[in-house]
Length: 202
Image (tube, rainbow, N blue to C red; front, side, top):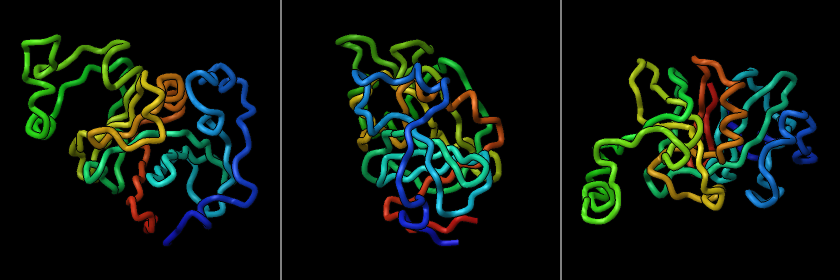
């Protein structure tokens, strides 16, 4: 079916998460209150256990039973680096390592190949608090099982949430991706909606 914002979210908007597990996550110093995880009532019917990302709202939804979902605030890919489509999570990693893709190296070689000042990561960076993928990463594959190099991952830069700054991946702050990571099994369907927003959900 074709959906839009009006049919995606139920009237009345978001309700603050009441689950104790969420109470320990982001503080006011990390994110504004409106960016904290919330349980949402959906107008449209979606199967439980899917991820739907709405780029215009900078929001990722983990669907639950009875048309509920948990809404997380995200940062997304900048410009035409954002890639819409339907994907599946085929790998999950805690404190993942990271290596720039060939496309990233070609776009911004000065970020990855200039070794005169500081550490550059042409050959990759081990996992840890300073790694661009943060505390957790969900790896998105296409329908035939190929790695797309798109990730849903963490970040320790809360100011980038609600912005389009990445090389195409979606980011949550580390405490939020750690929470989502525990909910999401391998094989989960992920829908990244186009920036124009009209999307056909199969």
